[in-house]
Image (cartoon, rainbow, N blue to C red):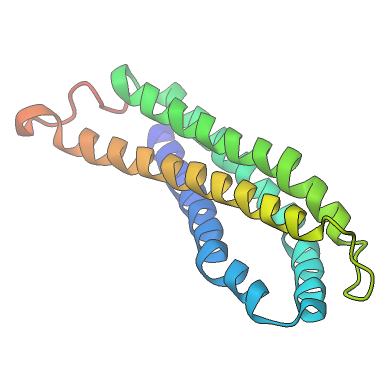
Amino acid sequence: MRDRLALGSALLSTGLLAGAFAYALVSVVPTFDAVPLDVHLQYRTALMRMNGIFMQALMAVSLLTSFWLAVTMRARARWYAAGAGLLALTSLLVTRFGNVPINGKIKTWSAASLPPDHAELLRRWEVFHDIRTTTAVAAFLLLVVLVNAARRGPAGSPRTGLAVR
């Protein structure tokens, strides 16, 4: 029972994280460029207020549940789950030390008085976002591979090397 709870929690949290970052990548970030700069800055600042705590908490839950899953697994499955945890940790660290400091600067900007390096900072924020999106999606995919491999087992045999304890 504990192993199923760990698996479900890890899949749910990493899936939500990957989905949230991917949605931002394909929808929110392009929208920033499609609106006037003053609207962009207002929207981005409001989004930071709404997402700040939630997204960092979701990253923490993703890494903790992936490591919890690794503890409940054996053999290669443990490595898949631990890898997912490390990828979620990477997303958290990139966010905390890449995106968040830039967000702090953006909060002080107005469209009337932008710093000379504003375009470079926005570009750097997008690079950090691309990295954290990639690592979050990779963490989720590792867990999907783990589940599929555990269900199939080698040559159709049930739950060998990747089985839940």
